[in-house]
Image (cartoon, rainbow, N blue to C red):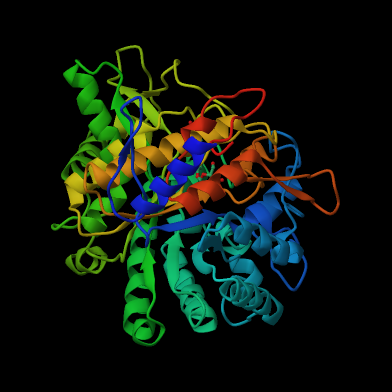
Length: 513
Ligand code: GBH
């Protein structure tokens, strides 16, 4: 008890000072600065449900899962999901209880524009979001809004989705309409969630809509999303920012890549190549001084295209104007991070489809078998990867641009005593503290994925990422806080991590007992 009180007092003295305490095991206790932004994240299709209510149009996920009911691992879809279209007030209560100041979610494009095009605006959808944002603000929670988190209006998919440049025009209309309708309430905008993941999934042939063109359409998609982002960024800054005073960026998936054999130069090169081909491809045009695609990306795809007999590079070229429009088209670095991969140079036996992004990249992606995998197979836990990723970004693009981690979290099978998630948040947030205090990185915020269990794309409801459990067998979709919700709340309030929750034990030992 006495030690607990002393720790609390010391805690309070240190908050915001940037100083630290030294614990018995020589681990330093650092604190998140006072203005550090804590938040939680979700996305429209994964939570809203009400897929055909309130005038909403159809998205590709609605359509595809209705036509292929066995597509997801558990045969589910998100027709109801967590029912947040009806239960948003309860969601806000939950966010409030966590003590965080920010909530990231997305707009459903077809809920606002049922046909995808802005000649017809769905008033009910607009009202839903305006009420949600107003209620959030009333609760002192700042909305952070993604325009596009993968739920494309069906009509555009039939036109080829993002591989068709006409999508730029329609996305521009949708974005402008959104700024006009919600810009008085929303001050943080994210344009297109994780373009790399989205293009690889959409055109690699594995995920919805399963259009297979991993060497051609995949790059048209990445190229067009970059251009769409730049266009929308410029529109916001030219037409809206003076009045609305918001910020806007492109959220990038930034998992860390490490050489499988650290001593092997081929593996080191392979890891660097992998980073350039998935992070640099998007970050370099926006954050580097020179702009455009990274040299390495340009050369690899140009050379491979040439060798394969293509008359031109499969990766389109930007015009000078486009390079300028992209350069600096971001007000902060929005970083999504989950895991670390081990990368090795391919051996002669390794085969890649030709042409394809994988062949162009030319690396083998593996995982370290000694790292724990609490849930979904691609997500093994290696917390130092977050700090290393941030270091890489800072080294490449400088320290001026503030970084906000807009997604980070882990999945499991949904137990209330979710020690794996508790450890995950402790470990990853500790690495973030080291990034801030020992590396001097410009990290300004951290949003956990996710507020609650929700529809995890191909995995349906078989993987749970939530701080709150959602009972998907209950028509009311009852929510219950997990242990991680309490610990996350604790982290937000004390502004530091608490490793007493690190290890599973039958009776959790509370620090203050
Ligand atoms: C984020 O993206 C999304 O923004 C969010 O919607 C999602 O819920 C969250 O992560 C958790 O997954 O099996 O090795 O081929 C991550 C998208 C796409 C990442 C599929 C893993 C499979 C990798 N995910 N991908 S692998």
